[in-house]
Every structure is written in C-alpha cells, then in structure tokens.
Image (cartoon, rainbow, N blue to C red; front, side, top):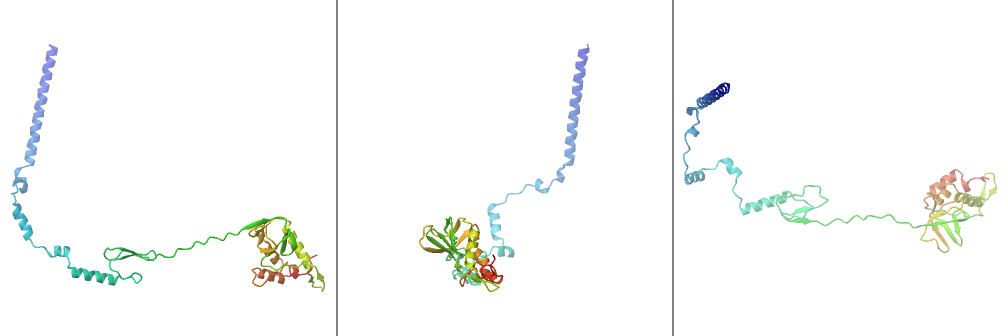
Amino acid sequence: MRPFGTLVTGLAGLALWAMLLNLAGRNVDDQQNEAFEIENMPTEWAEPATAVDSTTATDGIAETPLSATETTLNPSPPSAQEAEQSAGAADTGNADPRVPNRPGVRPVNPELFAAPFTEGAGPLERIEPRSPVADKEPERVKVVLLPRPELVEAGLIAFGGRNLKLVDITTTDRMRVCPTSKGGDWPCGMMARTQQRLFLRNRTIACEADNADWQGTIEAHCRIGELDIAKWLAENGWVEVPEGSPFTALVEKARSERLGIFGDDPR
C-alpha cells in the first residue's frame, strides 16, 4: 500500500503545481493589460496613416518656394563673363613678381617659402633650375718618403745627386759667420746645419713631390711626422725668409728674442 500512496501523493503535487503556474500566468496577463490600455496609445498608432498620392506630394514640393537661406547656400551658377572677371581679379591681386603673369599657373620653386597653391587649378610651370653646388674635393697631394737625408746646409737637403730645398725659407750658407755681442764672430752657418742635423737625426722625411726620382734641385714642403721642417728652422732662428713667406712673423720673433743666427754663439 505504501507505493500506491506515494504515487497518489506525487500526482496530487504535480496537479497542484500546474494549477499554481496557470494562475500566475493569468495574473501576469492581467497586469500587462491594465498597464497598456487602448486609450493610452499614441494617435499615430491608433489611426493608420492615409496613403499619399506620389504625384500630389511631388507637386507640393516643386511648388514650395525656397527660403532666403536656401537661396544663399545654393546660388545660381555665374555667367561666363562673371567667371572671367573673377579669375582676372584673383590673378591680379595674388601676382608674384618672380612668376610670369599667366592665369591658372602654379609656380614650382624650391626657393619660394610659401604655399604653392593659387586660385584655380591649372598646369604646373617649372622655373629655371639653380646651378648645382660644386662639391670641391680636397686637393690630393702626393707625398714621397725620402730616407737617409744628407744635410748640405740649413734649408737644403741632399739625396745622393739630388737636392731638395725647403719652401718659404732662405737657406743659410754653411760658411756664414755672425757677429757676437762682444764684437767677435762665430760660425752661425755651420751651427745652423748642425742644429738641423740634430733635429732630423737621419730619419726618413715625407715631402710633397710627384716622385722620388727628380733631377737637379726641387723645392717642396717636408715634414718629420706632423712637424714642418721649414717652420721649425724659422721659429728657432736658423734661417731667414723671403718676402711674403708665411713664416715671416716667426723669424721676426726669433730675431727679437735673439735666437739662432740672430744671437750670440751658443757654444
């Protein structure tokens, strides 16, 4: 009997549950109907719009006059004569003296620092290009290395049977004698050659020359490392310089300080 009673109780519970759901659904429908009455509907929902004749609507739009604002925003196209007068006035007011007076031409000029646009559209005009800037390459100086220099005199160097005179200075004769402050003489020429020998110390010198196989005597700039040999002789007073030499100021300073051949016997 117990299984039968359980079945009856379950069916009764299901029936009661279905009844409750049905009542709840009816309550929800009643509330929606009360909240949305036909009297509260907008008139455009309640009364369907009547069909408008397309021909009548079109005619009504065509017959409606334009307002003053619409007339200003959509002006009538100008005549050909008015367009020509407007274009001529724009060209005259914005004329650039560097550009020919040609209507409708936009200048293309890299030197003109301004907006390139002008009134109206037209063809482009390219002006004469500027001359290209010549990139001057530094002059290449050919340098030759001359080993084992032989000192003939201050400012004159020998390499076998070839002689090389240093530029911008006057050589000091090795037989030259100079006066002393006490009234005597001293062999300043021999001393100048000796000082040049001590400076070079038989080192290879670098000279600006086309080649190392010249004949006779040539003039060139020569260096020991970064030191110009002629400049060293001038600033120490062992040579004199010709007119216009870049070492004139150095020689005058050495003379005023009584250096080298301009002073007393240093021995």
